[in-house]
Image (cartoon, rainbow, N blue to C red):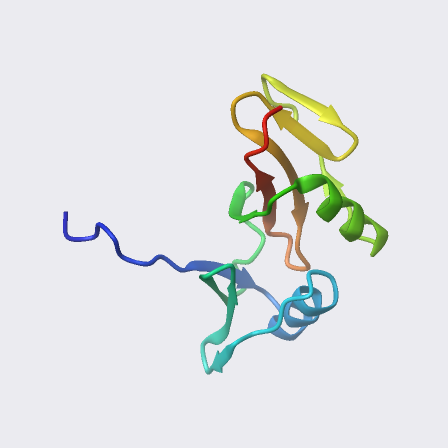
Length: 128
């Protein structure tokens, strides 16, 4: 297949790019590795995402990006302590322990919204 092995970059919309930049820096501890007239490039864990300005931000209503971490719980605790609020969703087969969802055979996850109302997910593959 022509696309097999290619890299993929997630595109995350922001209605206010400077507000989003502050959220990603102050709340998530991420700084852009590059800036261009179109937006901001972030690199973490060997992958990139592109934060760009558009008035269509926050309208997806579903998870737009997942951040894979070794263990969801300590990340949730740290982000909660800094004031981040986590989302809870009613999904079949999911058990909740506070803000952390357990999904048998898949691990743990937690969802939150960024400053632009985009839904992001933290996940790990630790057994439930």
